[in-house]
Image 1: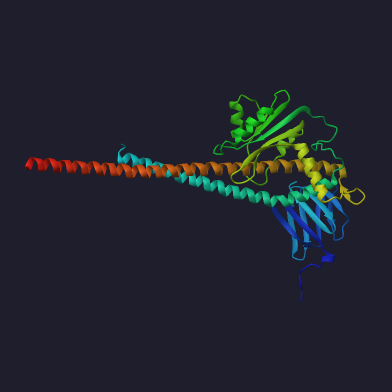
Image 2: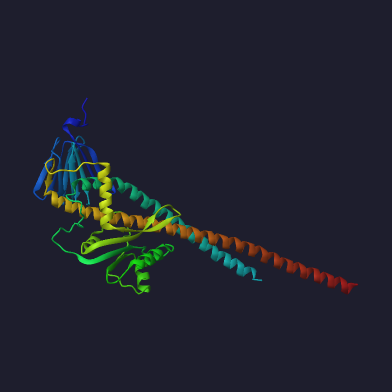
Amino acid sequence: MATTTAKTDQTIRVKVASPYQVYFDEQAYSISGVNATGPFDVLPGHHNFITLLEPCELFIRSGAGERKIRINGGLMHIKANMANVFLDV
Amino acid sequence: MKRLSEVVSEQQAMQSVVGLTDIFEGLASMRLAQVKDQVLSSQHFFNELWDIYSQVRTSNQFHYGRGLDKSPLEKELYIAITAEGGFSGDIDQKLISWMLKFYDKSKQDIIIIGHHGALQLTQAGVEFKRYFRLPAHDNNINVEPLIAQVKLYSSTSVFYQTYITLMVQDIKRIELKRAIEDASKQALASNNTRIKGQDYIFEPSPEIVAGHLENTMMQITLTQTILDSKLAQYASRFRSMRRASDKANDMMHELTREYSRTKRFYADERLKEVINGLVKHEARQA
């Protein structure tokens, strides 16, 4: 039976939230954004990482498809295969 | 004794007051619930950020996100958060009087948030540096203009109202720097792991990320004090409206009693006139 559920060893937990709203909180194959250096991608198993995000479009690929979230900036924290994106901070 | 029509007209006017105070009480209660929801929903987000900030901090000193090369004014900044309009009970008055006990024009500057507080300072003849409106919305509060002012001063104290229970509100003062350092220590105590440069990739650099987070922590602290103030103001307004509603209801009951008394009085008077007429009529016939 075909399934769209992503396997956890091939995915990374991605949570994108602002103080009053959660925009995305699921397993994903990758997340892409833009920081001061330029565009970057985060894949499962990424090294611990903290970066300030530039205004850009976050691009998330997950079992449910592709999702774009326009942001004004924020902070991304990656640890233990979990990417937390704090918006409006 | 009032005329019956006068009592009826007073009763109708009081009925409108009862209706209005009930509406205001309902509105205050609704806004109270909304702000409480906002506070609760943002708490988890802010706690996670506190955790990261406390682990990332490069030193135990807080620099207001302005870097070490900029020297601030040798004055303290007082920020007072008050209501935008009236109907909030006496809590603003308490807050302003309390702040003015510490105020010395040569040592402090005042920034006032909320029209009600600005009015009270003007009435007291106290000058303030800036006035900001209290944000009408309960979410996405933009505190950047406030932070730009905070960065100019060597230290900042915030005077605000705090919600304890629906019936109890208090006034509070926090020293911004100490509040952030204490909250950071608490967060670190509950999750005692420092983020080290060798375990992490920082972009652009650990210092810039820590500086940005200092700014963020100020945003969060100021946003939370504004939300706490709004919560306390709505509760204080609810309390005032409840008192006004109770008083209006008491007056309504008193007017109803007066209406009955007046009606009985005029009925008795008519009865007396009829009886007197009958007595005179019988006397004439006899």
